[in-house]
Length: 206
Image 1 (cartoon, rainbow, N blue to C red):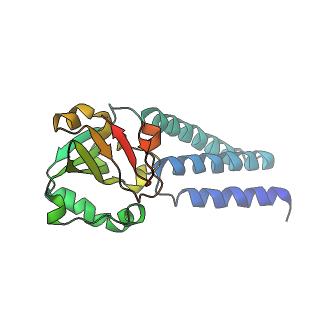
Image 2: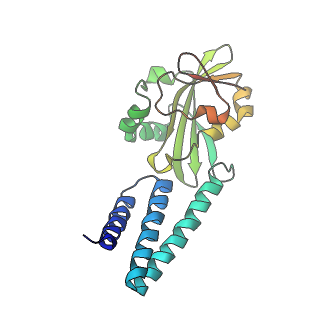
Image 3: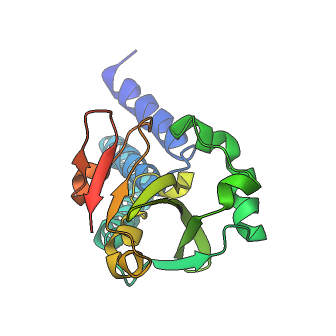
């Protein structure tokens, strides 16, 4: 197979793979790469309408990627809402995402007994819930992270950081230290100033 055909098939395969992604940033990045390959492929063949379409897709993807990266740490983009640990919408979220939560926090369990002494936060982007943070009051000013979950579409981001930025709210509840679970897959806490502990957990002094 000539190299040009290989490039064309590779670009098409990457384009199909990109639209299968659930993560926003990953989708845009892969779609940009596929569009660039197909733009070059069609330019060599002088199929100008396809070149124009793929160049337009590249521009659109670059615009979205810049917007996503520019707002990933923007407190104006995300809202943190405190809800009751028995809130039905919270329970609904935990049920709907239960299987995915188990992948990242295999020890997580949510019962009425677990809800006692727990503070719950939802991280919102507009009307979409993008994250859930549950903290348990362990006494002596220690808040233990019961759950720090990000929905699949925003998995390339860390919306839970906006809860940690609201240290005034946490201190207002008497918390001085936040400790994460020991068994958490792909933790991101060191990037936010948490200190790694010997048992695999992380700790933040408020």
